[in-house]
Length: 273
Image 1: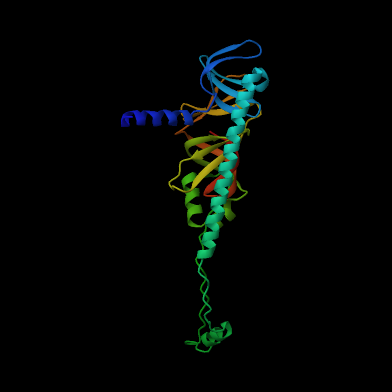
Image 2: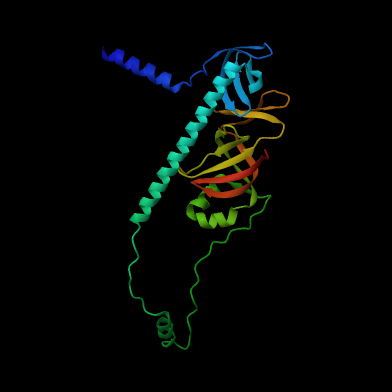
């Protein structure tokens, strides 16, 4: 077999491996005989699927699908969730192994004899100069203005504070409500959960601000389209509504949960503008 033929076979294998089985475009007929032409599943949820078809997008409940189709999509949803669980277990095992390795590599403190504190104090007191006693030197403190709920904090400034002193930043911001502004970098929707994340642009490679939203009560589903560039949702009226777009400069009202695994988590978010 020629090298070109071998390359084509490998490429075909990779394409097949990357495509979910049974989720290719097809005509879907629901239990009420409604036909969706060239439909493909773009999201699997706990109570149904979101499809894209010739007429747009549509959310279908499991009960609306014929039994064979419903079983096939539910099997794929379980497979994806199992894969996600396995990845989380692997990430946890790797993190625990790295932590154990760091603990073994940590140098032990040397047992050096230090002069008693009392002797140091006595020595300093016994040699006064011109009858004056030196005042103790206090460490310099960084004074920051008090955090106000109506104040606006830039995401880059928040990242800079956590980078310089994460413990102090956690103490200052954790469980505090405030407004934060930034530029949308990407969206992360949650499979089987009525939640989604908005990630803001960060000047740091390994530190980012993640805004965590709950679905509004009137929304059935929320997902990203246009290769993840636009976040849209379906309210009860079943009309697609654009919520945010990558690159938008936005202002949010939220509560800081603190630093978690190189992510500054902001929960209970609401878009101000």
